[in-house]
Image (cartoon, rainbow, N blue to C red; front, top):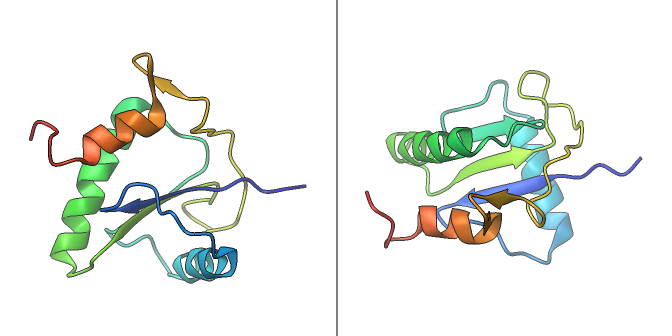
Length: 115
């Protein structure tokens, strides 16, 4: 069974990288953490609009307080065991208020968004 993971990397929104080996190593490194630190959030299938916005804000603040350059939200990982479960979250087909998810999240993360 193929496992589908969706990966958000802040502050750059979607992490664009064609080095699959690097991404696998990064996700495995995050999975080895004993608990989710304030700059990492694992999700299985929860992709409610309000949750995503609140978690992005919390992750950004957590990364700043921890002195981290990046925060990560990864779908398809159990948040307790860190096992790979896969997810039904499909950002290519998700709409938020009629807007494509990619556009919505980019606006949310942009400097032009209302603060």
